[in-house]
Figure 1 (cartoon, rainbow, N blue to C red):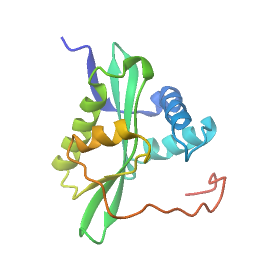
Figure 2 (figure 1 turned 180 degrees about the vertical axis):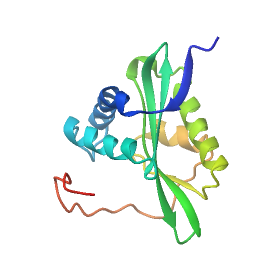
Figure 3 (figure 1 turned 90 degrees about the vertical axis):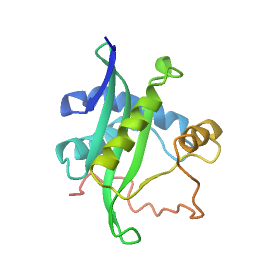
Length: 158
């Protein structure tokens, strides 16, 4: 029997998911880990499935990885698209194929639900991450991501 499986995350998973995001954001140069913000963002997705899905990979009952899919509409594609926001495997479980398993699950989900595209951002200096996604069919875009930070505290958002 396979000791790992993927399922949709639930509100009960919030503490473990927050820990994974904290680990992820300590690795990324653009973001600062903040448990309360990460928990608030995860809760917004988990409590309203129309916003997206968080899939978790459980291994021997413990969450060892997650992938976060946010739903939006592309006028360029004329349909629904996914922003792949977070992919993280617990550091003790990397190199065992769990990231591949999560990503393939997300791609399969997107195809079954007739999404037009999956877009993600990865750090320019993260060669390993870029190779990983390219190895699964993702290509680099000629577009340059830009952002405008409006508020350091988005707690009042709907």
